[in-house]
Amino acid sequence: MSLAAITFAYSFSPSIAMTILEKQKLTQVSIATGWMQATCYYYTMNKLSEAIARDTIKEMRKNMAETMMEEFYDETKILVVKQQPKCEALF
Image (tube, rainbow, N blue to C red; front, side, top):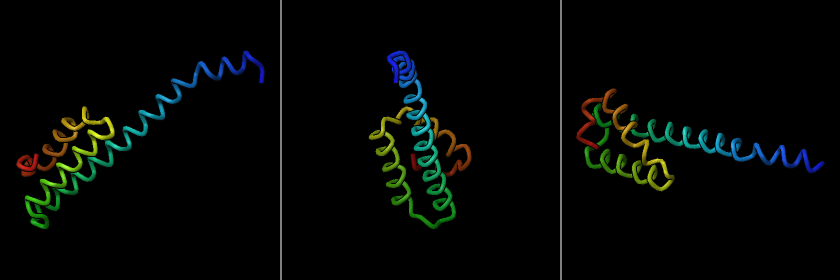
């Protein structure tokens, strides 16, 4: 591979890596949102106690913080509470 080709390929690597990172974050946020929605659904159907549901939500927030996605927590919370208003007490 020529120096020009290497330079060209290297110049685009950060943007490609950022796109992959963004896709990974989107996937993780989607998973967290799904878990929160499922938790709220089962809580509102009286299949989960408030303590277990609250612990699950707390664990999802902890996981989001550990994977540097805590900035999405508030948006996720708003979305879930909008869909399941009875779940606001869990947050």
